[in-house]
Image 1 (cartoon, one colour):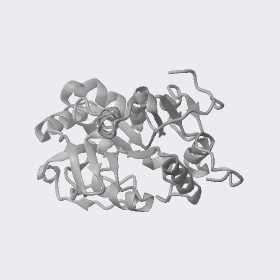
Image 2 (cartoon, helix red, strand yellow; image 1 turned 180 degrees about the vertical axis):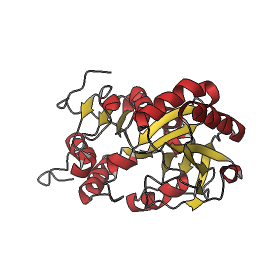
Image 3 (cartoon, rainbow, N blue to C red; image 1 turned 180 degrees about the horizontal axis):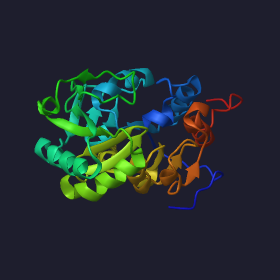
Length: 282
């Protein structure tokens, strides 16, 4: 990718891919009016907006209603391609539960006890959390189970990990070193280190969605804030990091915009998709 810059010449993109948490969403889990207006410009120009998020499909569905997004969404770090119009998964891949337990054992052998949660597969899948696990997003619903064994009762799309003393970067680095091909390790937000099916990333999910829509990488501009967005940036024609983004993502971005609290996505989209000039007749 090109070196980061804040003043690249406007380009026409037919696919706008946005992360949610720390990117399009504000800290209170809401969309600003400015962001919604900017996405309306995208739609008016005939381009598509695609949510690409670590949240599982059931936690994305209410947000898509606000966005008036009746189309596709890439959920679960790329493990799910969700069709909001029909409320079904067009594609999903699960994390083998035995492999997940083995991976957890390898991580705990290195760093001591961790706390775990899982996102179940399916459009009605639950988020289950074991004793001691604290949800990084307290507004998201979760069901506390009695013991870790209860996490594996149904097919899962990913495992979420927290450590009482290690930083997210330290936990993610150790997990990558010991998990190997058992799973893909990602860091998607504060307090959110995850294990997902090996080889599955936001890029694999975005590529599948773009193929479904008949669009290409060069047609795509992507927005994100965390290291789990790096594969998406590498796939897309242009990657835009938020001002609040992790340094690893900023290092590979083509552009750094303002923060999610300061409508960073809208700042870029307003430049790329100008409002129609009212003095020019239709």
